[in-house]
Amino acid sequence: MTTVQNEIEQRLAAEQPEVEVLLAEVLGGSTLRVYIDHPKGVTLALCEQVTLALSDLRERYTLEVSSPGIERPLTKPDHFRRFVGRRARVRTRHPRASAPGRRSFTGELVGATDSEITLAADEGVIAIPYAEIRRSNLVEE
Image (cartoon, rainbow, N blue to C red; front, side, top):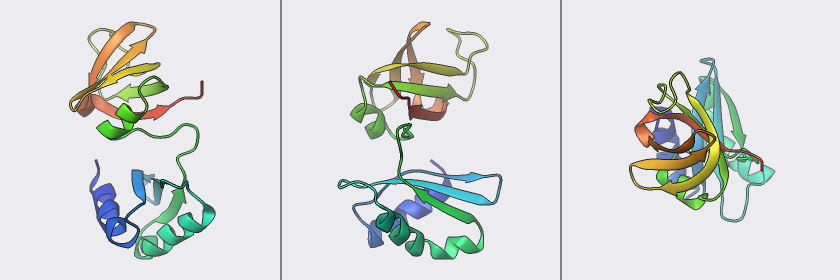
């Protein structure tokens, strides 16, 4: 998890405790994209409230606050556990030994522990430690 994401999570925990920060990423050095979720769903009004709570970051970045959408990012063990049984795309930091040269895998999430996920991909069942995951998200079925 990035420093920016940690900072945003801490700030929103005080101001918007029910808002979950799914992913906060800096793109191109100038855009800060924040994906949020809420037990009652994400509305335009909620995105506006979060934008206002993070208004000082707009001095450094173009700020985009959004719902996760269909291709919801998966960044924490709880996210993966919640979506076991769904299709996901996982991009790794390094090629996997079980699939030389490959860094991207798509398949069904069949397990998620505190240390790794298990994905049933075309290559077979693959265990991927969280430390090796560069980016991951659900894919439309």
